[in-house]
Length: 117
Length: 225
Image 1 (cartoon, each protein chain N blue to C red):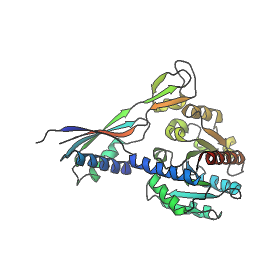
Image 2 (tube, each protein chain N blue to C red):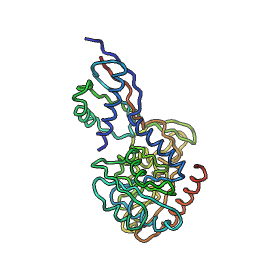
Image 3 (cartoon, rainbow over the protein chains, first blue to last red):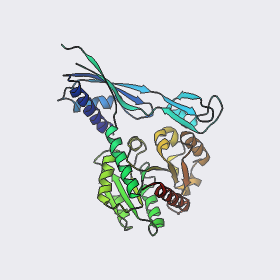
Image 4 (cartoon, chains in turn red, blue):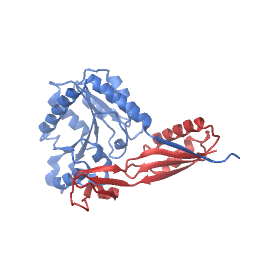
């Protein structure tokens, strides 16, 4: 499972920002993750608790904000928010085209912010 | 008690990997080596496809293979028998390869004169799609027994791949796999994907895939350097 290396990266990035901002304790971390990216909230928190236990991020709560999958029809330009399951069966509600869509959002994978003191 | 501050970070979780991946791509451009990241489920025919491809191309172009496996060398031994340079990476339990691991593989092959390098990623339709390996192209195999509905279950990988190889078409008559349905699902996710139907067992369709590879290599060499 790739939650472990991802969690290592998250910890190292937030510790870097904590040092830059000279804070003593990280309380929470907000991640922005697209619906298309696989990430199990429960496992991320579990690994984070384990990896961070001797750092100033110990006990920090991970909050995950999911961004929806949005695709744009290249035939008529209409953008539509859809579920992962609809992705392979998409028909444009405006022009009826059934191929040639561009993914506008849904693949985000970044650390948005953290609360610290 | 100090007051709680909200600190904006806005940093990609995979920024380090993205950096290493870009360095790898720059190096491949300089060396004019087309590196293809081959992904699929376990047992869909990655090694068989490589053996067929090596057999068809090894007299014309120089090929190398980076094998990834959680903890075995079975695939690498099969590739080594063909006489082409290959290298085994053990991912030690990880479900995917990242750019740093691939860099180790490329360093290990230690041959900038190669025309084509395949990465045989860990057999898995989920995790390898999330990690940029530094490859120039992503390819995936879907085998007929897996079913034509896989683009609906694993959309990310089908979105990333430039080429989809449908393997084990010799099983088609035993199954309700519908290539038209598959094409319609895949095209919605990725209208520009190249799709080849092959049987690594009988050799059917391999020529078209090999022609695509030759064309892709020459186009790449035309832009690289």
